[in-house]
Image (cartoon, rainbow, N blue to C red):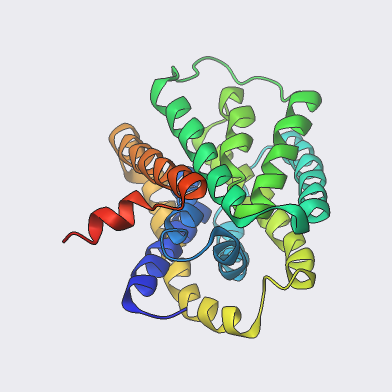
Length: 258
């Protein structure tokens, strides 16, 4: 894990990680796709998990009073089940398959964000069945590539939670599941001394970015910002699907021309 290209991508990934923990889940969803432009998604997942966990501490403090208890309990149950499934099949998942899967999730989520109509009206009661279903998928994708946000948001976005409550509930739910993932990641060898040393250098960037995310949730205009981030996620998703299926990486090839 060396070279200026890697460190540029790693710092950007750390910024996205922190901002995601600060309440911008769409930004957080960019972390592994961006990191996968420099290293494999499996390596990116193992490298960034400690960064996620430390960032979680600051996100938990920022949103300690803003969360929906019912949504959180349902989410934790589904996320735990999904991580268990991910651990059980981890040895049978190819790196190319994970790359394509991360890309496909990114594409589907970004298209959903770009073309869906924003939910309006009163808050809806969180139902157990749909919550367990989508959060199990979220736990699985979170385990293999830290991309649990998209399926989680398929369930939670239509619930009509206030912005701060949505951000706080998401932050707490994924802080919990990131801590759970430390155990299987260690036993699968995805966390090593080398990866911990690299992660330690990225943690300060991520921590500062947590407060950037909190600031953005409170102050920045949402529509234009999220549109830009969503289009970025779509482009990276296309790149990863092509890479996973063909072995060719369009974005890296494009930037290599300059």
